[in-house]
Length: 137
Image 1: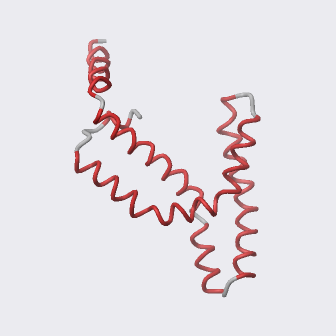
Image 2: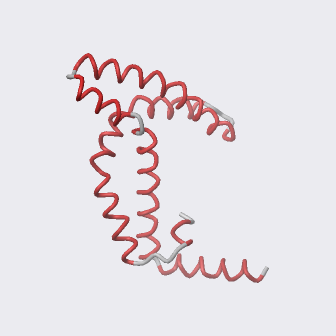
Image 3: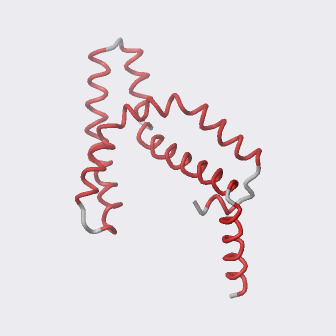
């Protein structure tokens, strides 16, 4: 990830990211389960779109349309199957679940990239030469 190069990748920063990932893991597991129908549908429909430039637009439309439908289904099921205080909590937790799921995946990807950059001197040197060459332009 380019973000691994944009800031100093200190040990404290890596530990902080790891700690944040560990703290957010329980809600990530919930978000994964709550978002699974939308996520799988989005992956299937995106794979069928041949125009790669249109995939993000289609993805937004899928998330918007399916998000509303899925939220209604989730809310009805929560209130039919659990006591109302738990249903309210489940509904409130489900609202940001899909966004959190994607954000956590992106954060984990960047965290792994930070670790790989730290361990690979050849890659760090290659990036340093690119930056030097770019500054010469």
